[in-house]
Length: 258
Image (cartoon, rainbow, N blue to C red; front, top):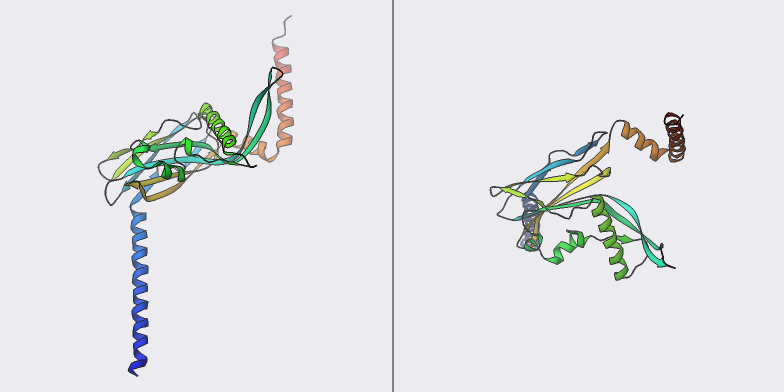
């Protein structure tokens, strides 16, 4: 009877230890998640005929001691075709084209300090923080040199359009725990689903992270035209050509010299 009770006691102790360990692990994970809390002033940006760009306020709080905040805003991810020109018989022509998947149409960053003072190059590359660390996946196999050429070309094109921001927005701390920053969106920002990623970094390690969704949509007559163009592209193209012809004919009649 005593011999049979010992194993059960050990089993009970082991079970209790396992429950305690699971509880500690859960508490540790919850503590890490609770170390960073963020939100946006608005989760929906409405694009109408008078839209000329906007700013969103990102705010939050940290717990567990001082740390650095890094903010990354990206999306929507779309395929992009890049073409490389070569000189043929004295004329520049498109010779090579490559398609890349999952290219963010918009990309911006924010931090309270210089990035190189916050984290190592390895960590920044792993989290794709910084324009130099963005990874674009080609549809076909490319060498590292070719991928670098096309990736740099994508970044340059997005910078010219104002959809990639080279400057880093300033994250301001209000005291030891509260912080805030503003995210700027240009007038030509694409519609779609975005994500706002906020990282809390201490001693070169990520100790907290939070991802918040953001939606940019067209409303009003712009929404109706957008849906019509995407749902009925052939009819939309024919209607656009007819309207252009009518506009040209009307301009010719109005401005015709006697």
